[in-house]
Length: 533
Image 1 (cartoon, rainbow, N blue to C red):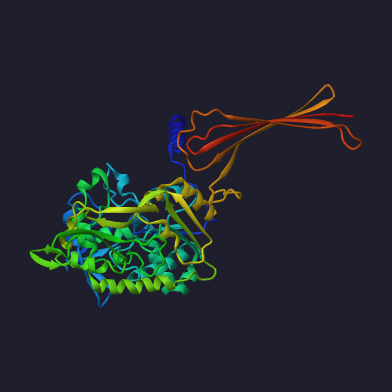
Image 2 (image 1 turned 135 degrees about the vertical axis):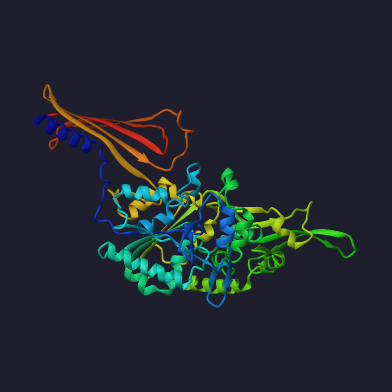
């Protein structure tokens, strides 16, 4: 029996050794609610007859056919809602993992190329390392991104979500972190339900929000569609044409158009090289330019013959003027929204990438002869600074009283994986052990890595030796400095004898190593020698 007991005890000890360590949880953190942008939520189709569910966004197997049959829609101007063409199903957003499942990895079944459908995944992993806990201090809010950002159904769901997060965290106010179009959704909610927003929200951090639209990106989307993923993965995904036919009936897309009454520093234009008959009967090629409000007529003419075949029925899908009217009211709500007292607003936007601003079709050598051909023409762009999708000028123009606006290098969706972004969020959320000297504007962090001090007496002298090391973490400048030599600087201080003080000497050597992978190592070696008078 004694031997059996020893075996049981050994097995128990072995199990304890291999058991995964429990994640660090910080109970003092305020809750965080993550709000995605367009196409950033898993969507499921629910069969009305048997209640069966299937994921229709995002999926790889039968992706295009399921997308067209379940998500293609028509806008209902009486309700402001986009309704699926399939009357036997309704679209829902999964609520597992307190809303995080829907915005984490958009296709959980995908193995190869999974990074192409990552959304908030890396940020969720990072925040859990900081001490956040799913269901206690970390939550997600997915939504049907086809709908308007001021659709009352969505706003009601967001209000209920805020209340549930507030209660689950023990009555703590919430930090909202939105990405892209999620910023417009939050701003609409703030403008229409300011009292609820003030009651539950502590801070709102908007990331890459198209506050004044995404001019070049949306103009070409209306005429040519858009690919959700790039590279080889798009061959197994939703076709550009299928996506185009969906977005023509989505109020959210119309709400992303360039704001026509904003005072743009660089006016976004739709330009077309056209061939027209001259006064002498000889064809002439001219470049026509249209401002945001003027380009509506071009969209109307180009999409006048657009249609889809759905179940054998031909359904016209022209540029929708009813949605445009609805979107203008949304822009009014957005322009009048203000941050309630007691709530702090922060704005982070992407920089350093060529971003479509003005769109041009045709060329002087190959002009457009029929506006309806724009749908089959590849555009060229005039680029400005931004994140590849949203220009800096649009993202910065939030029209709100902001605590800080910080631009960081990053691609529109890829910015959610940037270590630079995480350092800023960690600082603003007061997570972990924040550096009180950290400034998100210049993104410098000084981390002590070693400290040694030794004191001894030799022949009537007191000798103190000090060695301290730091790492200064800044934006990665690449490996171009990797071969540079270390910078060495010496400091010497001496004090002569006087009535009040003894003679002393000090010597210091500072070594600054080249920056590599965003880190710069600094060493300080100092020796102090003092002799009693």
